[in-house]
Image (spheres, rainbow, N blue to C red):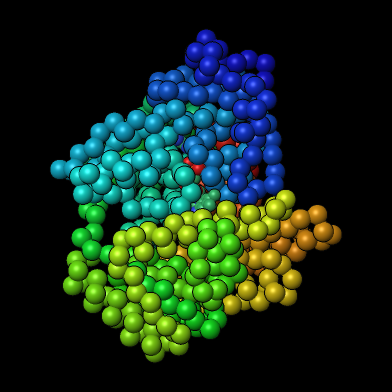
Amino acid sequence: MRVLPKDLLREDQVVTSTAVLEQHARGESYAGTALPDAVVFPERAEEVAAVVAFARRHGIPVTPVGANSSLEGHTVPLQGGMSIDLTRMRRILELRPEDFLAVVEPGVGYRRLNERARRSGLFFPIDPGAHATLGGMVSTNASGTMAVRYGVAGDYVLALQVVTADGELVRVGNRARKSAAGYDLCALFTGAEGTLGVITEITLRLVGLPEAASAARLPFADAAAATAFVTRLVQAGVPVARCELVGPRSIQAVNAYAGTDYPEQMTVFLEFHGNPAGVAADAELARELARGSGALGFEAATAASQRERLWEARHKAFYAYVAANPGKQSLVTDVAVPISRLPEAVTAALADCERAALTAYLIGHVGDGNFHLAMFYGEAEGERERVDEVAHRIVKRALAAGGTCTGEHGVGARKLRYMAEEHGAALSLMRLLKRTLDPGGIMNPGKKIPD
Ligand SMILES: Cc1cc2nc3c(=O)[nH]c(=O)nc-3n(C[C@H](O)[C@H](O)[C@H](O)COP(=O)(O)OP(=O)(O)OC[C@H]3O[C@@H](n4cnc5c(N)ncnc54)[C@H](O)[C@@H]3O)c2cc1C
């Protein structure tokens, strides 16, 4: 890159030091790397607009970056250029409890928003576990452990301020709870993975904190029994707030990493939100269903400290796997299938891993048909190929079942190969949109949809 936007920003906002370039050359759980030529750290929307306009004029690729916790190579600047790091844009601009909304800059972490919102009895219920920013979460349409009850990030986006690929600042959406005006451009920029514009402000809907909550731990003999229970639970309409399947090897890794002592069995963790009577009734219904589904137990936890400990351990799972596999690379699958197809999808995936003799960890937000297998590979001959092959088979089966190659992590660079099969002719529409909104092809090139 021959030119840098040095006249547009302060010196400390345009960084070319090796350490910072290297930090922005890679993502989580993705082996490919590419160095940006520079990393810029805008602090205001107008600075982002000026940087993108500059990039457009000079044909420089730009890659927006939040906390860089995405898992599919989303933030790897495949064609170099500028990484636009948004973590200095971290102001909570407004919190309006009376309207159940917050206005934030994209670099605000969801946990920090929740610390503030909690004081007003509100929260933003999307919980991906990682230290993600709200800009990154909206841009990947993130979800996580509570999607079964509360939905996905996009369900909470009321309005966005976006810098388009021309460097223009536009507002899409409004503050009303619903709107039928025009095309839904909030939905278009949500989940776009930085390929259509840079989000510089987000207006988010918040929800009331539940009055009461309770959790339960249910061990099963195997994945088939556990997922069959989950399918029945969801089909019975029990309003579960969290429904996580955790395999025995995952629990073993978490116990070793976090010092917990959860029994190392195929386990379903549940959480219920509501008022005290409702929560007790939901738990009782789940207990009854569990009894008829071969659960080996039902251990309830109502104390907040017990529940927090449980979810804290769950959130550490990925890092527990990494610690158990030093020096190895990982690949995390993320398929989602219709709930009735969950038992066969999980059982077949585990059988694939076993046949390929892979170290794989099962974990999943199974209440919405989404599960992950974190697979590790090292230098051993053929190990990486076996991981790729198993991941591929898992995706092919999910697509054949009417599901998706990615329930929540997104496409990034790794899942491009499935876009044609998953979308068919609709992929041409996506390409048309991309070409229209980003004619110079500068916005996070090489991601989301194949050229
Ligand atoms: C341990 C672990 C657990 C995880 N669990 C979950 C989970 O349960 N559910 C889930 O959904 N995800 C999960 N993830 C993935 C990840 O946390 C999410 O994808 C998250 O939304 C990414 O946010 P981020 O701030 O890290 O974004 P980044 O990784 O920095 O960026 C993600 C994408 O968004 C784009 N982007 C970032 N900011 C902007 C912006 N302001 N404007 C336009 N584009 C932008 C980037 O270009 C990139 O394409 C997990 C990751 C890890 C490491």
